[in-house]
Image 1 (cartoon, rainbow, N blue to C red):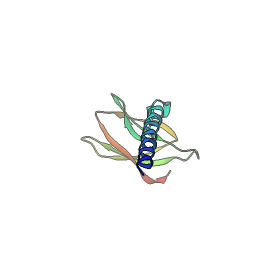
Image 2: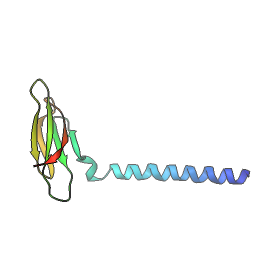
Image 3: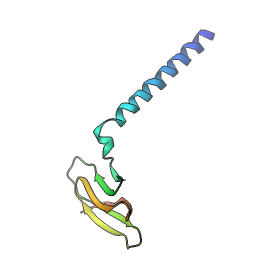
Image 4: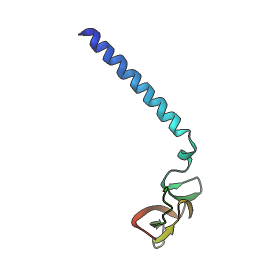
Length: 96
């Protein structure tokens, strides 16, 4: 019984280490630089529409001290404006 617990503990630790290494490797890929959806760099705001079917989608852009607006975006990265002015953006559930 004691041996079984020790083996289970060792296997659990090994799985945790391998999972951690996999996470580090995934973060180093170029895809992590441009995540899907809304993201900001130091000065700019973007929306990255990740798709393999070529669809265009409508997003709602949230703007600081101005009215929010909807925008049709193609696949890939779309510049929304200054990160100081754009507070967020999200898919509204329809194509355009």
